[in-house]
Length: 255
Length: 255
Image 1 (cartoon, each protein chain N blue to C red):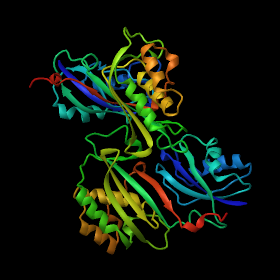
Image 2: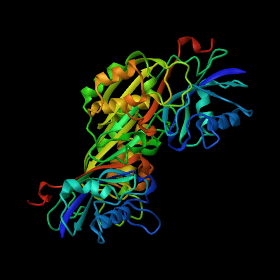
Image 3: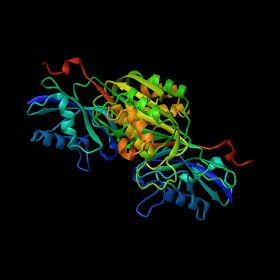
Image 4: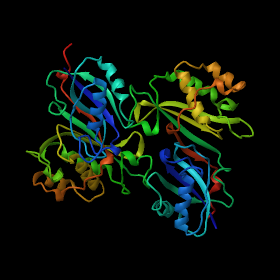
């Protein structure tokens, strides 16, 4: 068996999320099906993370074992012929024995997109959240800066999470206008690991800061004496995209 | 009656095009329905142009007459409450008596988007055409420059067109990388008026030039002794967006 990693892109609109669920079409199930066809045996991939229903990914990573060798640069097209339009394998590479896309991840980069035009935009609706507010960029950036570092993010976690600790380290939170459209705001979050719904609650809290509903001090308080009531609302899934997952340089197979 | 102009944005994926058709859901029909609800009488709009099934618009313009006065800045939200997610009114303004969105148009700006990544992109698929070629930007720009000016564009027109003359004036054709993604190429075409499928055939011809299938001289020849066989293929509709329509400064109602 050859240990392999695949980088996948998907439009999350018509999926129940990455992980296999009994109640609908998951990315994992669709990828397992295509890979099993290609390799003519049952393949079960392990994803770097679940993503919620409706969340998109440009660089989700999964690990798997495959029964025979195909040159890695030929794998994406070979798998993609068996995949529907809303998911594809962008890249594949052989990894070291025992590699886990989930446990070997060093960090992830997400972007949450907020459209702030005068009216909702049909051409942005699929990949952003629309607000009729005009949030203040400086206030949003101030709020974002408070979140950087190692904190107890319990106030930024949906209930029902089974995480052992709610302490997480956030490397950076960047709030900027999208190069695609001046009415589109991007909140880019880079961190080691995330709690359930954490990025969507961070985005909601940053947005609330931008419209004056929450202050920088409120956020500091939510990080020191956590309560979900102290943070902003969970913004909807379609604004969120998992852009990239980070791994060490040592995960490539030695040739 | 008050003459009004509305600027609309739509995702063309689920429409048969702008114009009312017997065989499916059109933008015009959906807009007529919403406006008729708002104004409590039958409203029939005139579009600046038909767009084909699957073509998008960010700034399509229509003209209509409305039976009572609503401040123009309040019209978009008032209409949008009756519209589905894939279409909206971005702006409305009162115009002079007799204004026609179609006949008073001075020109239009379209962008055709081509995605040139290593594999097809689920996150770009809805609004671009994917090619596995890597077209040469200089060759594409050379081809584009040949099309600028007043020419007989008969070779850039789908058969079945009923246009009296096939002479059209193109003001500019710009070929560039999208600010959104370095693998996305934008072909921006500004012209006074267009033949049926003209922008999609221009884009197909520019792409063919970029991959060496057609030379600059071939395009010059197609413009001087026209034949559809001399130009590139008609690229598919989802890559095309009507971005903007131009009118003179005199179309606003005098207040």
